[in-house]
Every structure is written in structure tokens, then in C-alpha cells.
Image 1 (tube, one colour):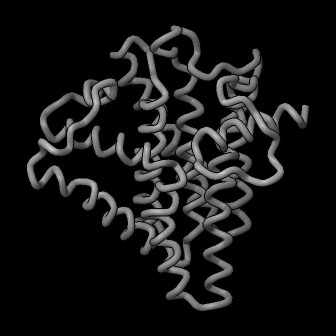
Image 2: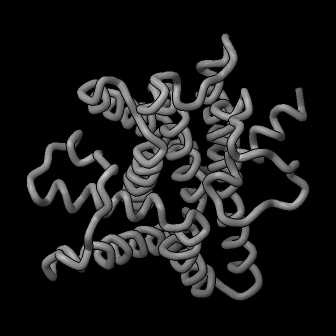
Length: 259
């Protein structure tokens, strides 16, 4: 059983992140392990925890200013680079289509490539605006000693992806990422446990609860939109929802940390 979960963790991590963690078993990216959806939130927790603990170490060794700069750099560039900027590009595409009047569900059609060369100046500035906003959020979190929100945001975003992955694949009309019978809710248990541990031991239990509730709300909103798309979903749409949720959670964290 342990090997099955390790295989699942390795598959999810290697699919969504550019670099491989040492010690993880090699897996075939074309074959989805049975427990992959259960492991999704824990992959987000692991990625967020790496950023969080690195920030703590830098604050302890060098100082708070260096920790803030590291946290901002990691948030606005490194995390996206490791994910090949896929979620970021999809989020920009969705925002641009909404700006042009597309409905929320129509803006989720990522089958057509986006041509940034034909955009007006305000639209070309959209990626930079998002990056500046994202950097401000990470900076505020680090300033208020709430870097643990990197854990919350990534756990929540991967939780939403895990839940929406139960929708049908647009190509096969089967579950996008199936799980064995009886394990359909286990990604919620995994996320709840991870959030509880980090929330309690870092002194941010309210943030952990808020993350869980916001993620639950995002899954409801996502399902509502995809009902209009015949309950179908693609990997690109899944990655969009993960990035969108992450941005919402970072905003919530910045607002809560300031009070």
C-alpha cells in the first residue's frame, strides 16, 4: 500500500512540476496510478512547505528583509517556472476573454491558442499586472510573518484540482482522474489533515479553516460552471482552476494576515 501511495505522489509531482524529487520512484506519465487523486493535496502541501521552511531558514540566518525578497521571488517566478507557467498562462487567457465579454464558462475553452501579438497594450500588460499583484500578496504575507500561507494556498489549489478531476474527461467521457471505489472523498481528508497540522503548529488555525472553506467554495463554483459544459473537463481547465484558487487563497491570506 505504501508503494502505491509513493507511486501516486511521484506521478502527480512529476506531472505538475518541472524538477524531480530525489528518492521518488520512477513512474510512467501515461499511466495514472489508482490513488493519484487522493494524493493531490499532499503534493501541494509538500511544495508549499519547501517554500515556507526555506523562508524561515533565510529569516533566521540572514534576516527578515532577505526572507521577504526570497518569498516574493519564489511566489512570482520560481513556483510558476517549476510548473512551466501553464497555470499562469491559462489564468491570463481566462481573464483576457472575460475582459472581452465572454461568459465565465465560455472563457474556459482553452482549445484555441491565444494570440498575444494581436492584443492591445492594456491586454499585453495583463501578465505583468497579475505578476505585480501576486508579488504584492506574497510580500504582504512575508511581512506579516504569515509565510505558511504558501502551504495553505498550494494545498487548497491542489485540493480543488483533485475534486474537479472527478468530472468526465472531454475525450473519453470517463472520470478525468479516477480513484478506487470507496476513496472518492479521501483527498478532502488528506487536505484537512495537512491544513490542521500546519495551522495548529504555526499558530494560524483560522487560516487553515479559511483555506478549507474557500477550497470547498471554489469546487462548488467550478462544478456549477462545468455543468454548463456537460460536466466535462480537460487537464488545462484543471490547471486553470488550481491557479485561480491559489490566487484567491493568497488574497485571502494577505487580508487575514493584516488583521
